[in-house]
Amino acid sequence: MELDKLVYPRFLGTTPWEKLQHLPRYVKGMVLRLDKYPANSERDSRHGAAIAGLWNQYEHHLERHRKAGISDTDLADFRWQIEELRISLFAQELKTPYPVSVKRLQKLWDEVRANIRT
Picture 1: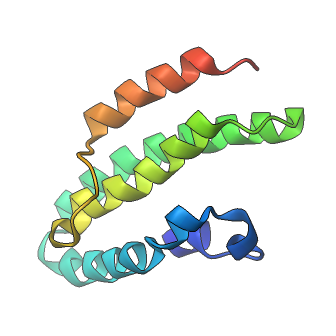
Picture 2: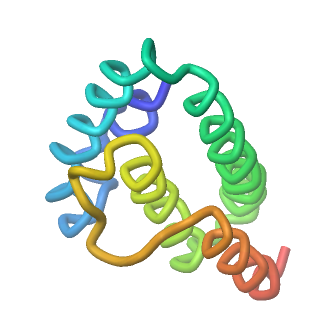
């Protein structure tokens, strides 16, 4: 569940302040997505699959970094851009602070992967 990725034990201590400020918008985006789902479940599924693929890439490398004791700011940035992508795809009326798209995230992922040392 998306909310579990944002709000979890000790999230206040591990989430950077600048990202915590966006938490209400992310939660509101989830509510809007649920409201819109009945009218366009196909679109939701299509976008949801794209986000799931990006999230799986992120989690796979995050786990590798945890095991190696690595803290990667580029990987963390990628994670937060996924949240912005959710807003862009499911709750456009909430706006994102910068342009974001699946294509942009895939390009960013290529850069993140190029910098991964493990």
